Image (cartoon, rainbow, N blue to C red; front, side):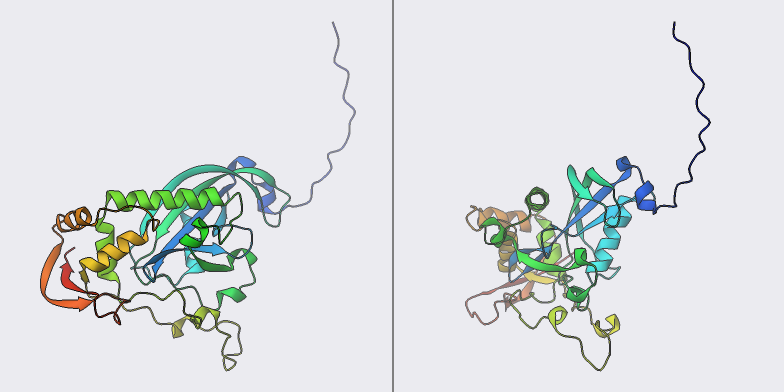
Length: 289
């Protein structure tokens, strides 16, 4: 039988104080991927980071809830009033390779993927966000059609996340087409995706002497009056899906009217964003909450 030998009396060397991120166990490292969609020019757009980082993301440490991380990401990216309603979908959990910024910690982590459909006309970025010193928050709007056609290539690790969020969003809209009515009732005007003079891309006004303009100078988009047309509802519903996907429009109109949330108005009006097309005039309805 072997005997235990006495251990040498070696002193314990003091370890330097490390950042909290270095001491966080790997099992507590979670990335909250926030995939943000918006409707612009009656087509679906997604907010992506510039560069190979994928969608907007925030690291969740042991002392922060995932929901708090998602909210902080939204606050950093968007002018998003507290009274704004939204559709938030949890697309599931997924393992992903990450590197903790400013730390030697790296390896596999678990990502909670959220897809968020913003309230109508609430898709504005914060002032001059492109000049933000944090590279991970330099973002831009990208047409989902460009991603599907391969015109815009995504990082291999982030493509499944965006695809999963897109699938969850489309499935929810198919199950609950009333989402379309709520969105239109709140929409004041249709956002233009091709406007080269959008305010977040402008150079800052030199009279302020700062790189970003005060947020108080930026006005919130006008809220809709609750009225909409079935032509608009059709355009919006189709915007969520690929152009080549077959959609039974007659059945869609019946489903929308069957919600009993539409009161017919004694007026017709052009489709928002298509005002110059005289043929796109449709009967107006009022959406009842």
